[in-house]
Length: 146
Image (cartoon, rainbow, N blue to C red; front, side):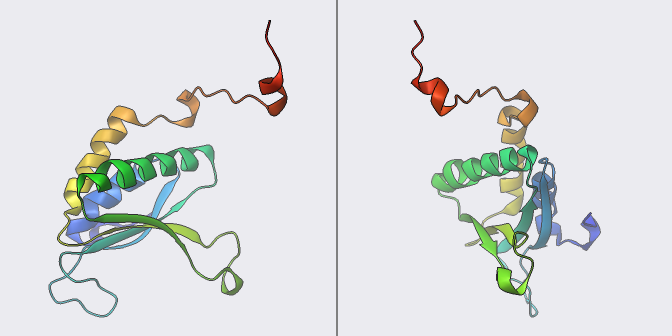
């Protein structure tokens, strides 16, 4: 569990918003700094990295965040990028290297994104237990129903 007091103040709300999704665990973040030291990002930029559990909860959360950030928020002219990334599997633990990054640039406000995520999470997120999406097998799709 991440100790919120150790996070940059400007990124705390976004980290909380992401961790509120089942199956999402943040790994690292930086809120941007006026005089960045090595390993810190400059003011006007920020990032959060996170892992996704290999569960229905993790997958539903990832799917929702990808839609929300890439389609809804990003297309509205916000300066955010959401993408998968991985360390070299042959040097690490294959099958455990994939994680995701969310980055803001050009002065994008992480608190505004966090508020947007919180609002849409409350309104539209459908957890696995609530989802009703029967999937027909190939055999079932090919059958005629008279």
